[in-house]
Length: 232
Image (cartoon, rainbow, N blue to C red; front, side):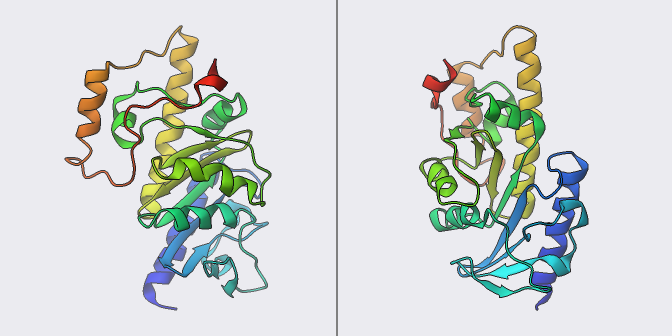
């Protein structure tokens, strides 16, 4: 194993521990993966709490989800099909994070997309967050449900399930999950206070145009509305 793979395994574990400490995952929930090359990936194993994740538990797989390297017969995450679909659809994706951050997952349980441009930083970094229709975990239903959104979105809510973020690297994918949960919390507070007020279209467009200056990677849908029928 080369030094880079060792570093990536350490980084996966660090992110897993952070997610557990933040209460985004419980028991064996959640999964993290990173791309080494077009046919090689590292992923968290199934059946292991993120609080107990160590580098020796990380599994190496190919683009078909077949195990290339694993200790103690560890198997890849049961959600690996969802991760592989992200890499298949997006050449720019280098890492995928799936978790159940409580507030954002609350929106997924309520079948409410976060389709509003209100918080300045989120307008720039994320854009609107759609909800992918429900799919049974570990089946092709989940990757099929997220596919329509991957071309324009780096953050997707999973109906009655949780959230998915992608990024050019592990840190970027993790940060997007952090951003999603903070936005969900502030959005909920605004709604409890009476209304979440969207920025003007002019200001939204100006903020989106600033992405290049801030060197924000990934995709952005621009000003669009998704899932309105579900929200109404």
